Length: 392
Length: 72
Image 1 (spheres, each protein chain N blue to C red):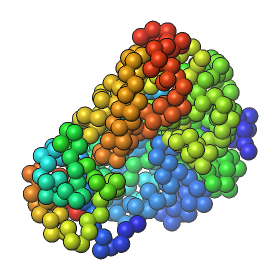
Image 2: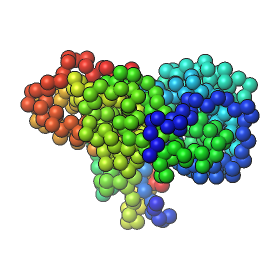
Image 3: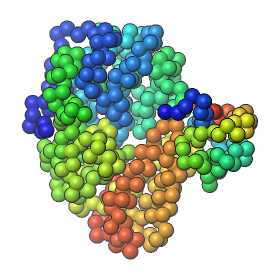
Image 4: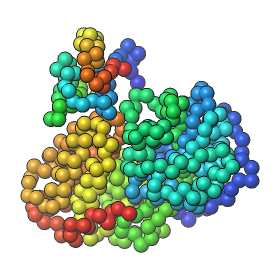
């Protein structure tokens, strides 16, 4: 397995601009991303070939690069657009030409500096669009809605953006990092791409590392690298657990820190790599306080459209808050569990499901600590604000 | 994924306001949750409509005041 020290870990953040933009036909692009096994780097991990194929028949579709980065713990799109904006612009150029895009838009969230992207995009037929943010604003349909002049909230998933997207046109939305990966692929080919990562999950990814580490920030690592190896350069401080996949993710306990970041290995922990967010929980922080804080944030970030999300997320967050505050109510875990199941699968976007996933993982991984709280103890709580550290 | 003849009941959650007409008309497929929003009884996200309930399902779709219910 490729490790942190490999040259492959300097792909995205260490490649200078191309002298000439590679030109690919649609067939060539599809073959390339398929041979490379490229998957989306924005969180859902969907095969890029399938997404591109969805607009193959469309006349002058819109191509959108997604650098909304609404996840508070994610920094990778901001770093990518600062260190290698040319790769994202090249990716928009390559894909845009292959699919015959009528417009190429790079959508940038409020926590990402658009300056370098604007410089890199100058004269290359790419519109840079600094947009309003929020946790769900980067969700595909919410992004398309905002770009069409509507509120930045998700739509019912029955109508796909590849059918009706920006201003009613078929729209292909790819994460900024995915586009940068396409730019590299177009230059160096699928065999080169597969020199890093695993056979099932090739290439590299950017990981945003935060929490109890000496050097928070973004690292690039081969897909499938062990969690501990990805974290190593950030110097984790006595990790008790790691939240893998961000606020919609799941915890891996300290004993599982050598787990390879592959889909099958993570599935056993109810986790996915997601957008590569890794948050380290240190020994002195109460995990229930952290989770309660995240759940409260996610409840606030609901787009306020779907009933179960509007009603259920605050209830779930409140249950966790009471648990974190050691309210001696033995019914709390069952009530949290009930709310979690009541919101799952009952919204237009993945926000309720993702929130429920994080909560389920918290209750499972920290079950002994839940029992301590119910008995009125904690031993880790440094005060009411301890959990707030989780936010950047 | 599903046979072509198979129809499913789909709630557009962005439109649904919990009027509850659908659960009244299709108690075999839908219950109310504690806030009045439809809750699939089958455990499926979009419950399959058995042939004997298709007419009622169509009626429920037409009855929804917010046009939040569809068969797909």
